[in-house]
Image (cartoon, rainbow, N blue to C red; front, side, top):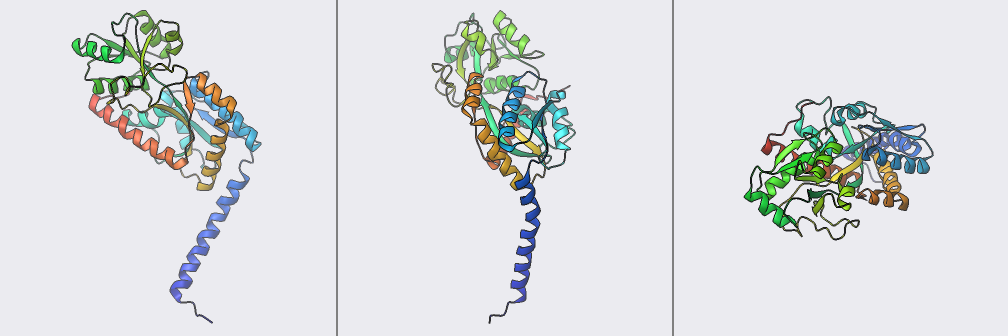
Length: 329
């Protein structure tokens, strides 16, 4: 009979203890959910994030047999609703419909947030990547992106670009463009996407980067020069990417929406929600609805999603420093 050494006994004891400690978490994940789940949307009802949250909630409810209830808690560029999730128990019953803005941009331009954007959240599932485009007023004498860049370089400070507010994705995209193209196009901030698109259509500003003006562009009121995403949008198959149009240096990450939970969620629960969210978003009806909104469904592991957030925080943080961009409520 082989004698067990003290060191082997200790190692076996530690392994057994670790296995026993993991059992409650595994059992909790297997039983989840046993009551309704809240999905907090940190923006007002009726927007793109709200619509996506309701698509996801329906799919999760059908799979898991419990209500997934969407609650809109807008304010402070998304930080109010985000804070509710950051301070919730990490049990999976309070989740966040997050975006590039809440996780990658806001922490880099806001001096004080009531939470730590890294420590206080658990990335669960990337859901959707939205398309953005470079749109110009039809009166701009540029038929393509190269002509527009040449024109803007030749007339520094004469052109303006619109955004839906300071520190928004449109704002950052415009600065990414200036850096990549070597242009000096002046930023004009509006209160929301509606007024910014209206002034682009009216010719009060010459350029905007985003997806809000696709419908008016299809009506001929805005000229789209390129998509800023790595691949063409099937809805506008003739519109080239930035690389195809001659500005490969443009490096603004695409706009995304995803599902997060409070920091410290058990791994087993994160994996269960990741698989369920990916399945819900891959439903053919959902895929078509997302496509109609100039977006595509993205399915990634929780770890890949976490890595994407980290990389984008650095990209937006670098541009914020370079342009001295700060958010003031």
